[in-house]
Image 1 (cartoon, one colour):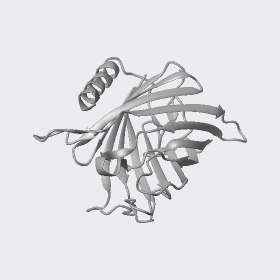
Image 2 (cartoon, rainbow, N blue to C red):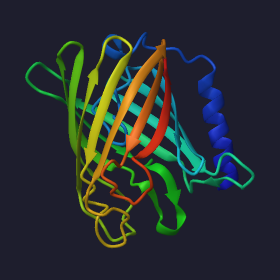
Image 3 (cartoon, rainbow, N blue to C red):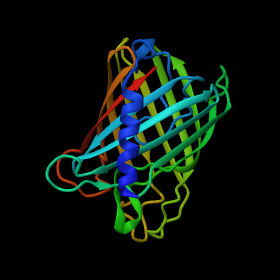
Length: 255
């Protein structure tokens, strides 16, 4: 399984890195919708035929690579894989299985109503914990999410939803709620914030302490189809850690 995982990660990197250019500049001039804020999904979609490739770098020398494709304007699929201890002399600790994503836009956004999407995503965040059979931040699992955007000196988006993760061996099987906001600043920057109530990670043998996960980030767009997302995660220290926040980085290419 782990050898197959290595080959899958190499395939993702090779297939996606070659000709990824994309939506023009970001910020207020972006032609694509945010499909996630930091860890929580939005109702955003890739247009039919569009591709996206992203790499998340996190603690413990962790890396996760993902590839998404818009089958139509209303149907998107994706595949991801990664692990920890990717840098150094120790053997990498690969995730047990790849992550899968499918999302369907059920209702298009209108002036009076938000976009509505349903989906499934098995990829969590910040490394897989073999002994607990879960990611450090649980995958969304099945979810329903609403997104509404406004013209406010650029774009201002509000997002919220409900999810049920399949990672429940910690005996916390609750349905969960999440929400967030993103705001463009000029043509080449935006800020994002999200709050994951983590009702499915606060009892039993769960890792959370009942505070939820408050995350924030700054997106910059240095070139066509390139996004850098500097993330500051778990600001409420729902999981014990040293320092101000769990600082991670996401690089994304779209075309």
